Amino acid sequence: MARYHIETYGCTSNRGESQAIERALRDGGHYPVPDPARADVAILNTCTVVEKTERNMLRRAEELDDQTPADLVITGCMALAQGEAFREAGIDAEILHWDDVPEYVRNGECPTTTPDTDVLMDAVTGILPIARGCLSDCSYCITKQATGTIDSPSIAENVEKARRLLEAGAREIRITGQDTGVYGLDDGDHKLPKLLRRVCELPGEFRVRVGMANPKGVHGMREELAAVFAEHDELYNFLHAPVQSGSDDVLDDMRRRHRTPQFVEIVDAFEDRLDYWTLATDFIVGFPTESDADFRASMDLLERVEPEKLNVTRFSKRPGTDAAEMDGLGGTEKKERSKAMTDLKMDVVGTAHEAMVGERRCLLLVEDGTEDSLVGYDEAHRQVAVPGAESMGLALGEFVDVEITGHNTVYALGEPV
Ligand code: SF4
Image (cartoon, rainbow, N blue to C red; front, top):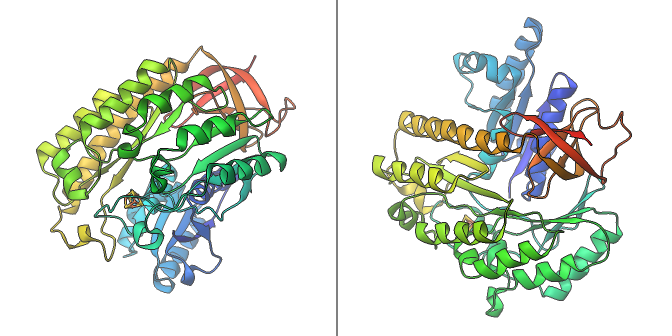
């Protein structure tokens, strides 16, 4: 769980980007602190509109670099257009695109929301952490040290929390945990499918997103889980199963509990049951023992499963973890591999978005967008922005049928029909 400090400069669009970053961080159990000296990561979302602004941005970045022991991330327009200026000023910071900031903070680890969290975001989205901890001991993970082994409250307790969220006005429930795929295994049984059925049977019109589930846990219930998704329209047809590598040797060194054939079997089970769904997965590139052949295996796996959503994390050492003690790859090599995979990701994800154009989808509007647009998610939890939505009288929490008219690399665009 990281404490983050975020500062935003510039236009409303930049502020919207910061809101999106914050939403993703809060969703993952991270929380804001006003004082950068108390943060684990400081984020500076920059503007580059005039030269004076640029000087201010450089000065603020230098201050943050000096004043905070935190990792410093610089994003926003100036970071993207003139990232070199920060490096030339000797500022020790990670320069990132807005979309990559949450993943950088998460560092390939699982979210850290706990069952005590009871949150309603933007008055529409309820966060439902169903368990704390995991059954793994990944060699690169620092989260595990804080959360320990899996501890699952009963199905009845979690259903009651879901009911309360709906009564408080939630139209979307996000089920989270370090690893939702092992929920119930401390009691000897996979309980996620049963929990989902019970939540979907609650009264009301709403949708449910299932958060990250590691492949080992999902593999043990893949047929039943895919069947539950097929049975219930309340569930977004969305599976986030982080594979992390396409090489079983690297998975061994990462101490992941699954192997690549199991991951492929999960994808095939969902493919068999669902016509329209989203596979989200994560890869860590540049793990210390990752050879050229291992990296190629990851690229091959990516091409084989074609995830519609993909997080690529460049490996970085976390203090106190076993992976931090391993002799690592050079920064240039990690950077090149990360770029190659990100390029491939753009192709794969771009193709998925392109296939949506001309289709009709039913969105649940859950987030403010830029200007008067609203952002929603369709049946497979694909993100769709609706320009001009507020001027048309639409509001957060409403369902709306749209035709997909275009896309960029992150989201599709929809027009109400
Ligand atoms: S599954 Fe692995 S990465 Fe996730 S919390 Fe457990 S040990 Fe950490």
